[in-house]
Amino acid sequence: MAQKENLWLEERKDEFLRDAIQQFFSAYWDFKKEYQQFKKEGKIKFSHFAQWVGTEDNKGPLWNLKDLIHNLLDRPHQFLTHEIAFERAIHLIFHQLMSFKEHIYVLEQYENIVRKKFEGKDEELSGALGDFKKLMAKVREEMPGEIESAKELFETSAKLIKLMLPSYKENKLVVRYIVENKELIEKVYGKGEWDKMLEFIFHNKKEEAYYTTAMWYFENGDYNKSKIYTKEALKVNPDNKKIEDFSKKVSVLFAEK
Image (cartoon, rainbow, N blue to C red; front, side):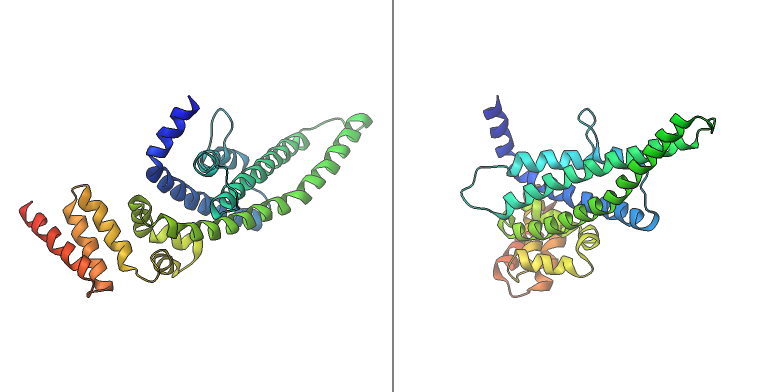
């Protein structure tokens, strides 16, 4: 059964790699928002964060990302690769934020308890609340370190995935995703980094990113979008004979359509 599942995964690897990259960028952006809220207010609402992480029975986006990356990249290798390091980083992020999620829950439960009225003369109950208070102080001390560790791991993962991308330049689905998601990529990496990423993937030949995207649309019968991206490629490098010839081919089919 496992062999059949692995074969099914391998046959759809291009698609799943695209999904993994998409889910990582979305997860990183979602985490950045949660991180900023924690830095500003010192706490995060459990219900929203718990949905994002998820549970064994109801997996959230982060849990699904961890599983997808593990299934795609957890392969035996003699030497350490960017892929192995990335898979391990996502694994560590997940477990770091699982602990953080539980700490959010514990604090919310503690706050619910201390809101309740009780007879102040009950020494044992007062002692229990004192113990709770000490425990919660320890939890609060640990939480900033947990979320900072997750932030550092996300930053490391973002660097690793960028280093992995040139090896996926033949994957039209991955390239198309990168080309068409400038806004999200710059939310993750910063303004101007999208252009640098395209240059990095194609070794300073950004036109190849547009050409690859145009090819995908052409192969899938969308000649209009193929024409649009071919024009973008020629804007970058009007002297590319391969793209110029392809442009003529697209124009003929677009006119016939």
